[in-house]
Length: 532
Image (cartoon, rainbow, N blue to C red; front, side, top):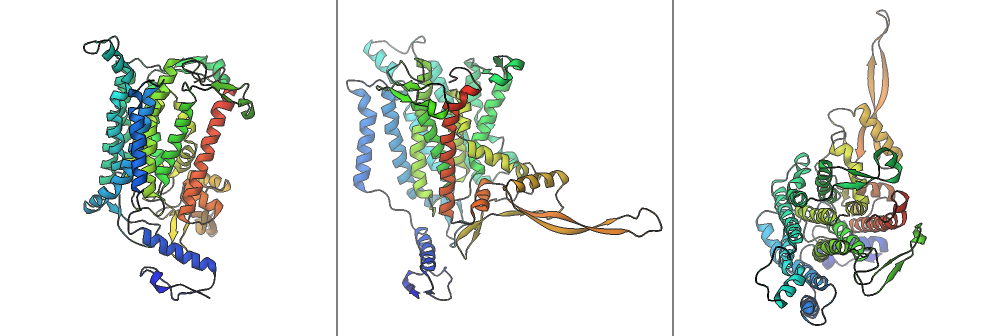
């Protein structure tokens, strides 16, 4: 028998005895106690030495372009310095500001915990504020090449022929879209907008992007995949449909992260991995001082690809425009990585704060911004494979074919501290024939678990002299909610919340790695040449 000291127990942990039969039970109790203790106080922040070191590195990166020799991409150093500030700002501001949200009533309970402490919500507002403020402060550095050139040549003012007005308008419209996404996301947190009204909200935030794209006569031509060229030709101009596609892209990028949520660390970890994937893709197009080789023959490609060399060979193929597009993407993704890392430190299991819808709106809009303005929306969608799967799986519930409860998060069992697949029930009426077919198919694929109940149906007699007959039919009365989290629990069995988010992260990493295989190892199957 193992003894558990009563001083280690908490009043909300219910045990009839403190005598435990096995090490597993002892570990389980320690998990319960540790979880309860950690929820009551903020996590310990990094030491002063770590803070001083990071601030020193950040200051050096920001000031490095001011000294000779000037690097080939000076703004890249600056944005890395700002990303460190984004990390530190999120780390230190959340513990200071989060109690104010609780006092304002922006708080909630963690449904997957045995305790009932108030957890600050809508902390995505803190992340978004730090993120957008740093993007605004970065504006002079983004155009430092021009500013330094004009200062050396004693030019008064900024001439219309030299200053990159197009790049500035694109940058400012992107920041404006992020500001609108922040405002709309916070309104959603405060007023708890229903899903039917929530889905089109990101379209409003994308209006500045679309208008600037139109004003600058953005390209609406798309290259047709090889299998369809016999019907549509090599290039097709979508016209207004392309703007509809971009608006829907912003809607999907925002809501797909919001739908795949409900456990500690889910939203921030998704955004972090996608942002890192976008950054890795951007780095392939930058003019590095060294040349690297990608062995694409290992991925099924026809030949290897070299990248590197200042404004010369590489995946940009000597195109300065391509390099500038991916630099623009890095300007937005690096600070986002810093913000997500800082927030994830406080949102990791067991969470001290909740992101709310604001973080999902801002991160989703940031991905839409770089996908649209840097012209790699198809590549961006490849990094959303888990989110696309989760959205398609959720469609029967989102569009009313299957009852959709307010919360579709996994069900928490307080006795075992494990998560189980949550369910939805057909209370008012049995499912329609179409719904039954869809659920049967999903059940055969192992994506949902159905509960059947027999019901008696009365059949009219064929002739007046004969009696009516009664038959017993089975109808679906319950099904597990259609989310990827419930599918993971259904296929892998009940697990702790921390383990579930780790499985989700591993799934996201695997899918994003596979996305690179598709993009750079299999794209030649449907596109000729290198479609960047």
